[in-house]
Length: 386
Image (cartoon, rainbow, N blue to C red; front, side, top):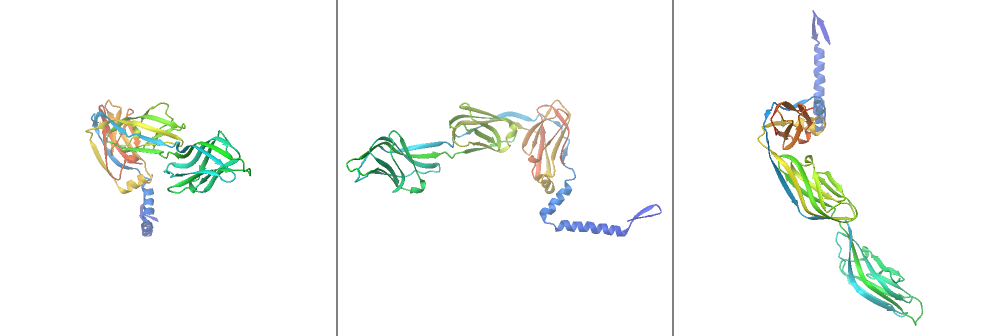
């Protein structure tokens, strides 16, 4: 409450006390909150104001980009494989069976399955060369019937062998010719060729990764080359650099060349990843990754710190990190910025450039420097949370 006396305004003591009580109550309320909620409220209060993290007048920027260099990374040969393949084991090249009413004819073979992580199943196969009489061919796996039927001359008989019916170690496969009918004066004969076991597999090498480091400096360009051998379906070869797609096609020739934009590389750790879908096989041979860069030398380096509250605003997305650079003179239209080892080039033709740098900042100490290939004078450089 205000009280006027002789042209003056006085604040009622009651009003001042009430204001202090309200402020004290709000402070107690904030202090009583859990740490995470208290930080969130303070962040919201702070986010309403802009805050300058760094401001300098760099002045004349020397020609500070050094010599160009080329780094070649050699990748070992590798294979991506998701293609179906089969391998046959011939049990016997020719088999003759003859049965009568009084006795069936059969042959038993022993085998040990060669199961791997790529194996998807096994089967029995044979060619029906000849068949006379009335009967059925019966296939037994470890004594259990898995097939019976009338032979058809000229056909290939293929029978899937269930994995649930096989053992680890030695298994038995029995081929039986069972004569049908009651005629005791006739026999049934069967001739088989290429009696085989087939193992079907599918490749499971779907991904291959290559890690490499890039030294600090300004990246100019990159190129990946390889010799590609493909078989199977027309499934694209996928190549990613640091989770960004750089190639997704079916190669049209054996020589693959992929240009890579400089902004996809990281200063430090990088990941080049290869992957495929199902039904294809790629052999990737004689791979080379060539990275061209320019070193940044002799530039004046400035230091600034980011405290806990500022870091929270950045991490929680409550502030943009805007770096503004102002040109005063010089013939150069580009400025090279090195912020904590992340080097980038920006056009300053219009006399001013601003860009977002939140991803390049760190909690605690930060460094920044400016360079140019030609004469350049900067009147101001300011980094703000807005």
